[in-house]
Amino acid sequence: MQQRFLCYALIPAASLLFCTCQPSTTEEDLAISPLAPVPTEAQLGWHQMELNAFIHFTTNTFTDKEWGYGDESPEIFNPTEFNADQWVSVLKEVGFQGVILTCKHHDGFVLWPSEYTDHSVEQSPWRNGKGDVVGAVAEACRKHGLKFGVYLSPWDRNRPDYGQPSYITYYRNQLEELFANYGPVFEMWFDGANGGDGYYGGARETREIDRRTYYDWPTTLDMVHELQPDPDVIFFSDAGPGVRWVGNERGIAGETNWNTITADTLYAGMAGINDLLASGSADGESWIPAEVDVSIRPGWFYHASEDSFVKTPEQLFDIYLSSVGRGSTLLLNIPPDRRGLLHENDVAALRGWRKLLDEAFSQNLAEGATATVDSYRGENDKFSVTNLIDNDFETYWATDDGITSGSIEIDLGKEETIQYLMLQEYLPLGQRVSKFSVEAWQNESWQIIAQATTIGYKRILPVDSIKTSKIRVNIEEAQACPVISAVKVF
Ligand code: FUL
Image (cartoon, rainbow, N blue to C red):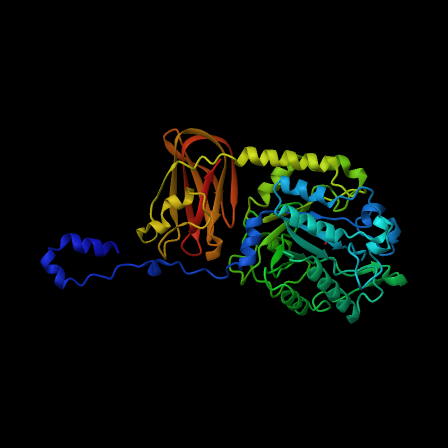
């Protein structure tokens, strides 16, 4: 296209008739080919949620256990001030977008009146057996505009037939009940703790299952897709297929975090894959991003003895940086107490955390700054540098095909103290960047202040109170031309 303009400028008008200029480059010519694999619409929506809450609540809350054996009497389930509205309104206030509830944990007690078992809230004294935790949480989510998700433990230490084909039918029936009565469900969680000792209807024995074949997940997932074709549901398991486990329960995604991985050879509960789950792989065949699940307390369930071990706002902030700040979605567990309320200490920690987040990320110094770049795709405004600072995820800066590096300079206009840099890749076209650095203008020269590998949906780099008037982001390596939605400076 540039040649075309040169051609018109240098050649006298008469000779234009004989000019064999190249045809002008159209928007179509400039369209960027997606770098496969790319996220589905549901996965993209999941990335954009960033913060989801996990709720662990069941008989364990009353027995003070983490894993119930399966022989707990429903009689013990009796929250005195149960209030799902309190849970969800606090979660909403501090910024969560979705809630995933343990509808059934490994002990097999189910939190809704199920047609398929007596081992449920129906047999408990709570609300004279008329209560429904799942219904109350789903309704509170609808009321407050949060998405609702379900955890239905595949391992069931209560069921006599756990390990037999009939249990799979039971499990599927319950899923059907959940989706039909409480959907839409944005995410379904099935964890990797499977098989071992349990009550199993009185057998009190150890049962091993073949994790790869017993559950026949493909059939279950097809069934769920039919139950809820739209909006699509994201399936979590250790190794996907919708989102993968990050490989630890400490709140830490890999410093290098690819949303892609080759999942065919992985399965839930497979040993020795934790590092791979944390980092993913650049050449992974499927889009299966890492989800970071971690509890606000040492345990997943409420224990009064842990009231003084609730993570502090500062610890939660660090977890935010090592999860959302590394391109993952955070699934933070906040377990209700025996009253059926989120405990005061947890609520205070969440509010303190929100305050820290607001303080850190409220003023984007790049908005209103001057941005320049060494090259942009087709020199067409659709890909210009201003797209990086317009606060719109849908617009992006990109280079020409074959150019896998680039430098973006942001002039803040005056000296500022900066704490964090935030970058975002435009994921609908695939994850591309594998190496970048950031420099700050100090003492009349550029000084490197941060170096990293992947960006993904969001990358936040802490830079420790640096004083500068200009920063420069250098995309050094990418798998294809970089496509960046945002550069923010705080
Ligand atoms: C694990 C379970 O064994 C834990 O109890 C907890 O539910 C955690 C989120 O998943 O697999």
